[in-house]
Length: 412
Figure (tube, rainbow, N blue to C red):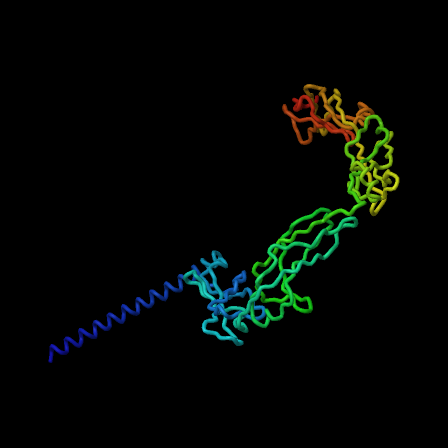
């Protein structure tokens, strides 16, 4: 009897100790969780970027009808330490169409995150309506549509060529049945010579509206247009004819004409005689001191006319010829405090100036000043840079010497 009592007491003691240990362990875990949440709190927040929505397990003989969302928004729960390092590539969103026959379904948007400890708790939209139809496909010829015309005097020679000439369309059976034709639209855009350009294809219905949800393979074609100039037309350069010279001390810095190429027309025999350019009527620049811009007629041979506006805009830029001079100037002291005197060594400097010759020719000695500013300076010896004040349009290239020795002392 005594032995049974001892065993019972021992068991009670063991259970009591285990209970205390469990309680201590639970308390430690609880404290750790609280501490961890304080240091690295969990954040519930909308992820700032949208995630692409995938379609998975779609039967190869079926296709979706209509426009499904291409992206979804996610609400995410993540530790704050991980939040800023999350990227869109860490997430995935999808619609699972496994074992789905033709029909209409309301499917839940599934989403997950590959980063441990991060959970997706909501998607927007949460569910998506999906209609499945049997897939159909057929091959159709590509029809080229030119949306504009070449410039006057040019034409498209022959039919536009497409390579490849056909495309395979595939998609939901009802959508494929709506396709009337596959077109490639192209613009000439004022081009005066033939070109080749890659153009995207469109599947359109009887109303000319593009049909969505149709796959085209290939999705583009290379179109070649052959653009030829008509007989009796010719593109020629415009040659500017200038008379006279600018005023003394000025020069021509640039000459331009707009347009620089014009189309002339006439009999084929007359056109053949034109050497590839036509001159403008003379533009007089004699004695010019400023730029000239004016409308000028073209000097056309008899029987030749210009296509479009008969005048061209001639611009002649006139600039002064630049030169340089060197002046010797006495240095002037500024902002010397009362009760002080200053000596400058050297007292005179050489100032090298540059600018338009007419301005330099009219420059007077008193138009240029060289100063050294002593504001806030007390007695002592200083190395200071002088400054030259010159008229507008004249540049200071350098001052020799660059620095001066200035001695400031008290005046008695």
